[in-house]
Length: 384
Ligand SMILES: Nc1nc2c(c(=O)[nH]1)N[C@H]1C(S)=C(S)[C@@H](COP(=O)(O)O)O[C@H]1N2
Ligand SMILES: [Mo]
Image 1: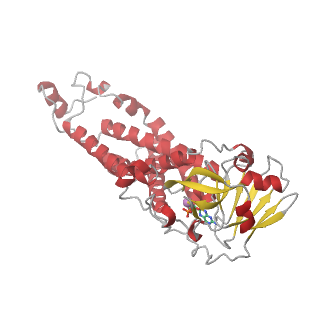
Image 2: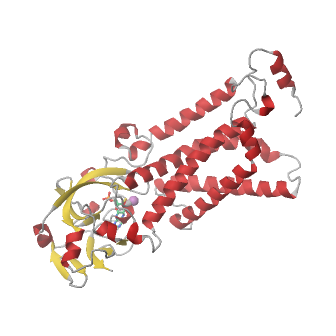
Image 3: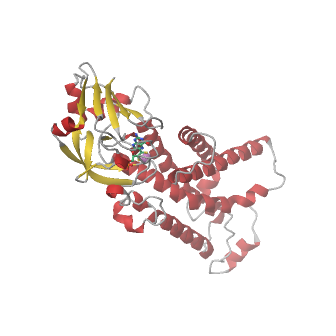
């Protein structure tokens, strides 16, 4: 290793020279490991969310309906880690951007491959974080469906991260600790400028986290200034993603009936449903967009309704809404949810009859289940 003038100066002076360039491997390593950690957490929780929403057929019967707060926690972490990764990604890109302009741009086949892999890494990271952010505000300014594309690019990103770690392993291990081999004999600390950069970055991550995480972690609800949803805001104290109007449901008349299709099919009027044994559960509604609210739901156990139709206790169920169009008008549920005593066809929310926006006259509420699958305006249960 050549000795730079700065390094020579460093040896002469007893105090550190406050001019570390910050576009260096040590800074890239420190920022990179925080970014890697948040992206890893975001990927793992995203994968879990995907499996709960779109389980492969061999897993449908085994999805856990407990802990009841599981999805609230993991999806809260998914959105919080993705949000925290934004300032980290910007800092990382700033640290390494001079490398984009190295000359000559390609030195060898290996170098060309490395640059291509970095391009994939940067593009997929920017795409994942931005598309996730726009999904939270429900803005889809692109022609493709969000869920499958966000999921597929997530794999691309994780592959690119692993490749990047492998390629950069020598630099990463050299600069993992402060006393890097190339700087042996120098004071074992980061200069004031790197320390300020990292402190500023920590403050930025802390600020975006504290002002958004209250959307699912309600004790911090008062600080929830930047998130688009606020847990307590909305009819009956809950936000609404799809209003009754947007779903094309203006009124539900007295002729509404719940049909249960199974070996012994039957249907029930609302009065008959209200006359069945009612149960009360405290369960969170946890939206994939990260907001979550716990509420008190009252209604009839889905298990009881299915049993009455002669369903096998391990049967899967299809839940059908009055809604005519819309991606979530029909959902399916495996036996772990259907048989769980906490899974209700809810008629009441926080002591009042469900409002039309929350799914009047009946909606599904089940433990550890993504919000998108908590079907509103239910009119049919089909034993599969
Ligand atoms: N029929 C139907 N049910 C639905 C939806 C929908 O679009 N149609 N949206 C779901 C989503 S994404 C969420 S987060 C919850 C929100 O419930 P809330 O509006 O009562 O808060 O309802 C779910 N149930
Ligand atoms: Mo949702």
